[in-house]
Image (cartoon, rainbow, N blue to C red; front, side, top):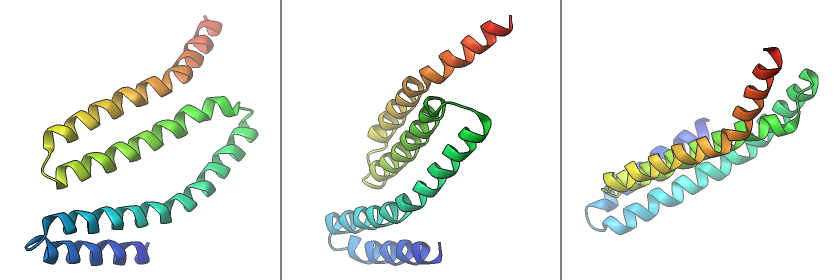
Length: 125
């Protein structure tokens, strides 16, 4: 995390200095830093996924039940990232639409999980 924080702070400082003369270049620096940070974290997410698969096996859960959770987390991260980029570009309205689209997408992805929960509740009644 120390390396990621150093990259983020360095990129932010560079963007602030460059923004005075070339706002487009500052946005490109921020986007490149975001891509580097996201790429660095994606490899760590594989370990989280493996751990969740292991937990599912121990609990006897189907991988199909965990897939919506992982997809929802992915949508959440992507939505937050895209909305922050839009806000940094001065487009708060677009950021709000991105957040709304992310919420709807997360809801749609989680529908199979909600259906399974309803079926389980129906079996208990």
